[in-house]
Image 1 (cartoon, rainbow, N blue to C red):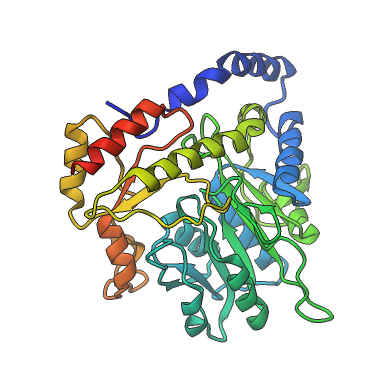
Image 2: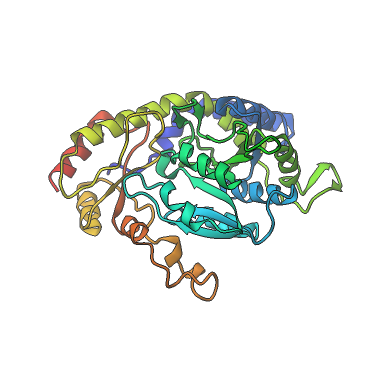
Length: 383
């Protein structure tokens, strides 16, 4: 069986270094908010070309804390609306709700699976205060257009970069988070922004458990976030905010410090496999994803579409190729958001529903061999 993702094989090259780091952390006797985390925060901020990185417990907390941070600063208020793609993973929406904000769904583009900027404006109301751009499957959303809309409407831009570690917007060569540079709205205001990352083991940069981070250029926001993640405390036992316990621990930070230098090379391997898929898969029953061959896609996932997904998945399984569906049920169809809660039960998003009914993710990772890629292509072409 060709596994969808072989995490054991991905982490094997680091085994000796992991064990060494484990001994160092154990011998240091400091397991939370120590030197390993500080080192990672500085390194990841530099990698992303931002001023600040705040390590947190997971990607969900990263998103929720950004919104809560903006509420503390008075940039958002409970009940404000946040534009979000209708086909995102549910965590994006849950994070908005966790901050007592209101998610407003917008259809994606069928070609890219990312939010359609041309549909954002019609969903903006006086209550709209932010846009959550999700870089789904590893491909950056159209951030130039999103930023333009945000500037015109005085909106905050937040990025869900959980799947896009290392992706580059070619227009300004900023890695993975796009709107973090200061953008003047007028003489007195700036477009504030922050990005949320997940280091869940299966991500392009994954640790050995849960982990996350926030990056931003906003010094006020960063100051609040450093406190919010630690019970709302800047000084021990003195609590300025109603915070949470969400800290990237020393051991996970240590492992991430080992893996970060190889992220770009790993992403290049993913792109090489994706290019082969796009060039060599020739089957009219299978719709391939859009990619313009730029560095704006790091192929966290390689997602195809077919009208007969169950048959394709079963066919691949019979040929020893494991696949995964990301994601089978769109958020507005989830029981959690039914008429008794958000009242989304009767909503209709045809593009989103088509995507969720047809997508299938093929194996793609830095440890997938050329022979395995060739076999997958051969089998797909025979479907």
